[in-house]
Length: 86
Image (cartoon, rainbow, N blue to C red):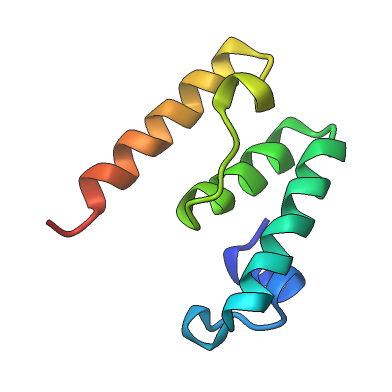
């Protein structure tokens, strides 16, 4: 899943700054629905990751039944926290 493609799919643009607050809320809601229906582990991880970056990720235990997936999500969270400007 390409990041820009996901932004276009859920928000109509790949430009994060151009997303109006109502469109952001609507896109996040659609992502949550898709996340709940998605069966492919990689696609679920990609959706959850984007939701995490947007501050809207559901709890790891609710999304990832597989311990390896939860660990990968925790690693992703740690990497994003380290990459965030202070």
